[in-house]
Image (cartoon, rainbow, N blue to C red; front, side, top):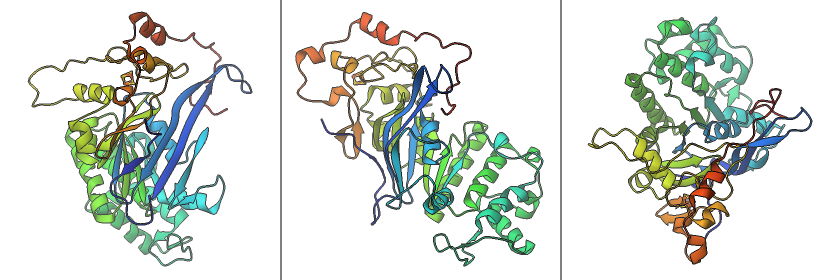
Length: 387
Ligand code: SF4
């Protein structure tokens, strides 16, 4: 068995990864009082990632797997319970100039384009605001880190910058879109404006949290292709968070599969989806729509995701896993190499297990691990609320 392996997104250029997360952990307090929680929700546990320049990494998992919490941790919108982040090899301290630079370099695009734009302002306002706050990239300003100049700018300069941004996200003619309000745009056009707003500060990494899940199926492909173009044209690194493993295969170089707050399998997108090593990845793929598949998929995994206030011991997938063994309910498996660049956190790939450890789990053990926890009182703090 090897130790936990970081996720490496694509071939790394010289100088190491652009963004590195080590042991990121987020536990949300629940129940009790403001000063003494009754328990914690284990939303993200010990996740390590290495994002290479110009690479697209997909974080895939079902609802409640912790993938959106991980995106917020990477964007530094919430404080981690444990772990650290480093950008360009430099550790990011809580309050520092490096923190401000991080905010410019790592931008988040949210799932809901309806909610992420202010309905009382036009598109121009949404794009000018970050340009005024952070300056216009490439304008030869005093900030050596991003080459931006902050402060007042002539209207003509700002208008040109807005038109450039709208052209980059294929909203043309840009002058017509700049004057529109969010309610005058389609869902896909709103999401393009949200992406343009993120691009306004010339980020190196775009965190796209379910960017197409609220869009009509017919316009999802256009937004995915836009993300692919941005990577090709601008060398942007993208972290694509999704529940849809088929779109992850289409867009990403590398896929990391999350289950119940942990990464359970990683690898090159094509290899991981062609030959999934982890039973949960196999379950996800069997549930993905496939027009070439004549028969209905047989979902061999049973049950539902666990309550993360009381996650199952050992492998968190064991109450649902058709291959669960005695050791699965006792010890957490670590990521193990299973192929070229592919790694899976599953005891099936371990060698040297004893007969007792390999013994199949009994139904009674699985039921015990699946039992729901006692409910918290009505006045319990909601998951997601900081202590
Ligand atoms: Fe299934 Fe055990 Fe592998 Fe977990 S570690 S996926 S329970 S076989």
